[in-house]
Image (tube, rainbow, N blue to C red; front, side, top):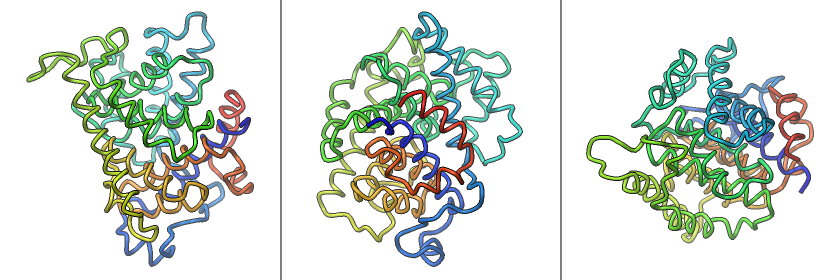
Length: 335
């Protein structure tokens, strides 16, 4: 239990590093290179990660900064902390890992002084919001309402679509529940129940008037669209698991390519739950997919690490992964 925060953030980075080299590759080419099980060894020393890990570190540092202030868990200090770390990522010379355009444009706006509502991509539900949200699931001592608000707020800074908000919350809660000892077999039911419970909950104190736009009558109607899309994606995962997953097939054929938020969550969960007690096999399957392989594997690694801790991973990987010291610092803070 004491190593599960570390296991989560390292697992996130391992999945990212395994999936990065094959992003955009066709499944057949991946099988030719790595075999039917996907990549199982880190490449390079250090093994380079993508913007997925970089942005997860930015979220983690913002949470540590905000949580260290008196009354820091309020919208204004949280937004300011996220603005600072996102702007620093945007300006970093290491920001060369093919980041998504939504994140780039939004973070450029934040760095230039725009409010988050001016900077965000209101219509974007790309996976860039939920591939970085795992740290929200690791912060200790938060009640469910605050954890949900933080998950949606970090998403809203760049991705304003309701599905990006809902998928980020579900990802954070999956990490939180697994880290707390929830059996993987109970996870799907808990996530589906969360969709039903939260379907019309709008967090106005945090998200203000983000919902307003053409064709939208109420905030509740706006956020319900996101929860409904996530519920449909979760049902797709449940159906695939009931049918009996093909561990050697491209998981994207069952649950989606992962370029958008609900599909990234679905395929990351699917790979984790195909191999509930084989974390390396799970991230290898996720990385060896035809879609947004680094983001899918990033999520799968976060889930597996939260469930099983650092023992889930080969010990030597911790010495070879890029940003190892930053990952250790964050893991220690929440372990």
